[in-house]
Length: 269
Image 1 (cartoon, rainbow, N blue to C red):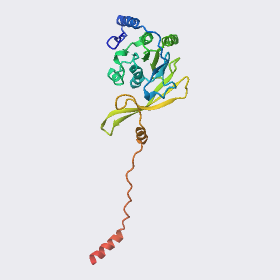
Image 2 (cartoon, rainbow, N blue to C red):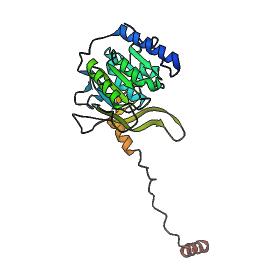
Image 3 (cartoon, one colour):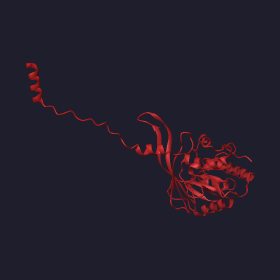
Image 4 (cartoon, helix red, strand yellow):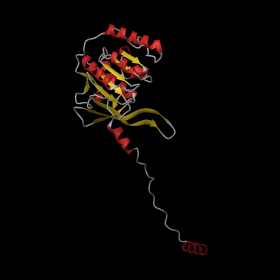
């Protein structure tokens, strides 16, 4: 069974070529046909383990996530390292080198970069065989289509991460995972290179409505997600404080009359 980067071509928004690609994708899916997932949870990177009550993504559900490529890759990485297939729909700027740096198995990664308005059809077809999918909506979906997709997710045990910039959650979603407060490091005053970025990731679910947050480096210095160190957090908090110059006492006021008298007696002596 093998459908990877070299086996899947991007769905084109133009005419017959797009229809041909959809048919070819369906044939590949039929060849890959799998049973319903037996896993109740898909694993998360240890840096995110405290975000969700179950410490993993529930199967058969959808989550709304920030459309950050780094966050998307970090959320896929643990499942991919465990041997699960993953797919990304509608994110043409997602880099395969960055995916490999996060430890994602490229031979088990399906990319559909630009399906245009066919993103929902591509996502629904992939849900038949891929346990973890990220989809960036190319158009607004009808409620009826969302309901059908949700039913397919439950039936196949597939987890969908909907990458949306809106603060509203995807209808019928289990929860949301959002990235905010990014702070890049490595630049000085007119010098330096960006080395890493510290961000806050916040999650909330239907069963745990109170938000849970972690502060992580995404990416860290090694290119993957890392828990932000306490020392780095202290430096961030103090970064906005500007040191004042050292205090020095002003010289005593000059008495011109006294100075002139001293000069006179010095010359007279």
